[in-house]
Image (cartoon, rainbow over all chains, first blue to last red; front, side, top):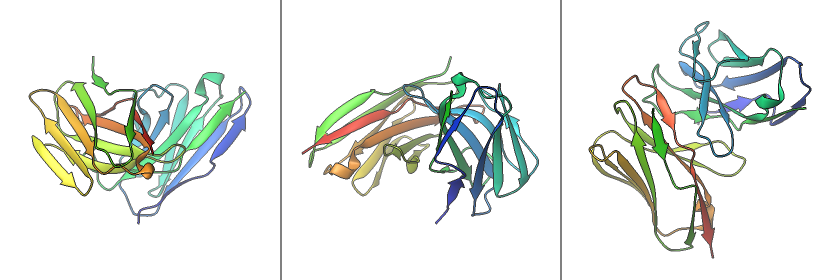
Length: 114
Length: 109
């Protein structure tokens, strides 16, 4: 079974702090994604990566950056956390480049910024 | 703009059948996904449709009509464990994935 793990299930940070969210997949997938999920809204893509050291902006990249130094690991960074970044963050991976493969999601990190 | 519409919430009875609709207005179409998400958990893949028609997979079926911009997920013989949110997502002409807000399905005994 494909497994996608995220570093924390729950995280509480203060405004202005730098926040790292890590995601690891164990199935040698090419693609990795970071989404945020808010009530009443669909999943919104923050960044994705189709290869090591490659990254592409999604729909809402402002205030976020990412890093993919190894194929299995994709990190999301909030440079200076703000209260409007309080959300559920979901990482996903898929086997090949593009979006026509099913995505495998991690359990999510619920981030609260105070 | 691009838009995916799903009902916010539906209620059904254990053992019954329920149909969850998804209508989309996107710039082109290259496929449609359905995912299931239990509360507090990760979404999991249910189905993928790219051609018109019905795809059946056990108690779950998914239908697509590209000309109408419409899909539905049909759940038969409902079980309590089917209580979850069901997410519809469409691939547009630029191969971007557009997600609906999801339908929360409540199953009552």
